[in-house]
Length: 373
Image (cartoon, rainbow, N blue to C red):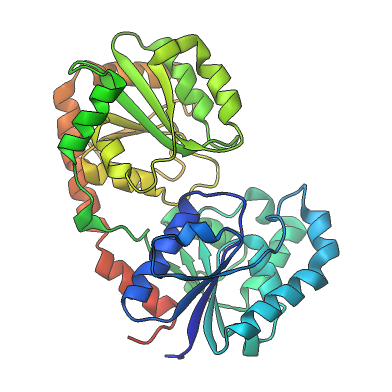
């Protein structure tokens, strides 16, 4: 295997699942003795970890509204990338997470990048699966030795974007499975702080507050479920103000709490259910895995990212998709059946323990990244 530093390039305007998942991977690899560094514009993502960080600004993420600006700035962005990689020599592997870096690093010489590996945390956006964008993606992927897809659904979307199936490794999210379990005392304390009684159905929703996530559906479902039901939305994002306005008619039945990164287990331990409202490009949402490891059943408002992750008899995918009334009726059924909640939580936890062994995940990543062990 090729020796040298693993350089992970991840510039973003968000602090979400993929961003933190990458940091967790790098932290675990550093603990195994690998030489890793993260190039990012958000250095605080790695606070409290063993990951060395170098700050870099490559401008906005690639999107329709930013495509022209990025195109005009390509020479300058390439110069910044080259300078940053040159400072980290010898680079054995460059790990790329988002489309701008994936496309642009394909233009840099291998003496700077070493082996290129892509990480795909969700389904390739629909606009990159056809037309000129698909061609650019497929051409850039030729520089990637391997592409690590977080789920089978993600793998299918990468194949549909023109990448040979043999180049793709499916590796689930790295989760510290033995450390994630029900934290009953902390959960009980949180419930008391929220004023939730023994009969209150506490529904958690951990999410980025952005338009792609259908948190509006989760809030609107409260119009279709009565009784002692408390909805807690944990997260941050540009849509928080709009979501708070949407939730205002429900008063104290819907509450917002800060991002629970670092104490997600305590939050989940206080919940009876987790509702997940996916975006169209979900991969393998870690919040679903974590909730199920705590023993909390998950209700997904659509199958995106949840199909194959919620085991039979271990949760619910609502139909029709993103339907507030259907979600409200589902919540009411769980509210009235505590034994169902316990049974499904146990089934979900057993399934996650079997599928997310961290040692197996790390070994698969080391093979994909060509890291000597």
